[in-house]
Image 1 (cartoon, one colour):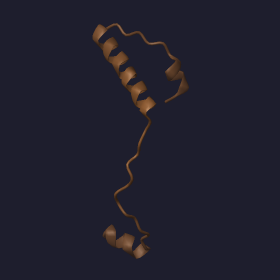
Image 2 (cartoon, helix red, strand yellow):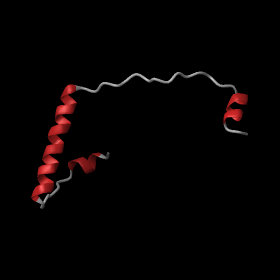
Image 3 (cartoon, helix red, strand yellow):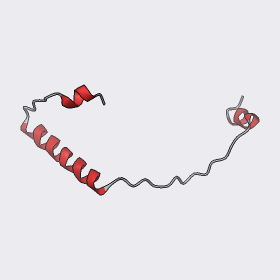
Image 4 (cartoon, one colour):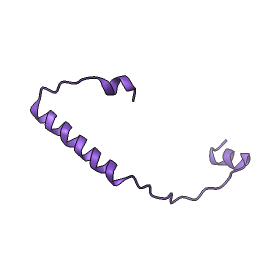
Length: 59
């Protein structure tokens, strides 16, 4: 997201949209305070030779 778009003023005329926006900001702050946990990858990986790649792509 560009910095200029963050710094722009917005005007919310619809009361429901304003409440929803405020709630979304609150949820975002709560999640940021909890921290982010990333699940480990469940897939294994291995190096493929050129022949194996061609076989996988049906070339």
